[in-house]
Image (cartoon, rainbow, N blue to C red; front, side, top):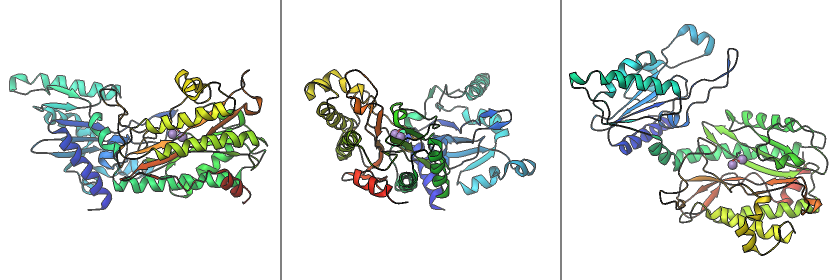
Length: 436
Ligand code: GLY
Ligand code: MN
Ligand code: MN
């Protein structure tokens, strides 16, 4: 068996054990119309893909747990006519063989087969409320099953959300996933370094966005992981800016938040650098502050630390810096307690990263305690500061937005910065920007 297929099979086995008994029905994402008869590029559902490795649209994974555990794929039938237009599709027989399912059938058979598969199952694992068509399909099926009571057929006693189980599995990245995330991170890091060499005053933000896409695809990534943020000057103070249509001005900073997707796995990097290749004094002061906060936060990423430790550390460094730079007044404790730092730093310091850029996984337990970090978890560390004009803010900082974001894997003894190739010290940035 190929190593990728063995990986997906072992994930299904873990999910089947976690279920214990019952049936799980996990559809892939729906295709979405962009306009007329054009669709957005199809992106599989992350959890469906996590358990199947199957990238085609119109597919469903059915898992039967218990003594006679089985994995069944429903997918599109082979169709020579459609394949002339849309390209290759596996069809159930080849998909079953290639992806190591126990059985595979055509989607056309799904409703009829579901009736017998659901009959007498103690539990149904299905995520309600995500897709109205699927909710309706399952409801119809359960209703129909209910009419067979006199024949001794039982409907499942409970409908549970499979995401609780899948999200927990997805949170711990296997060595196979870590390898993909390392490669995704490297591709994005190379693109960020290249952007530093390419930028010149007078260029448009979208020209750099195009350079990122070129670097992503050239190195084998299948897509950007999210819409790139290419924000010159004041645009960087808009956290989710993605118009990317303004000219880049001499003397401004440029904040780029861009990452790619490789075989489903996201990278997510932010870098901030001067359009003309040299930080001004105030820009350097703020940049060094955000970098110090980020380095201190990364130090906190280790097994045994809790999820919030990097954020609290970044906050303390930033708040002290805001006081030193006369952006905030008072003692460190008072600025932290009052939340005055939020005028300049209003987001958290990271999120889980994986198949989704904001990946699945709980951050707190049921008692509202922060989760502990454990080897195999991957997260971003991304402090920043965003300074808009205001009466009590020194004018030389106005319109400055800075974020520095890396992707970090928790290891047995500490952490590995997956995006370490993307340079970030002032000296390294200024030196690289002198080269072409
Ligand atoms: N690029 C999305 C984020 O940093 O969360
Ligand atoms: Mn992020
Ligand atoms: Mn980001």
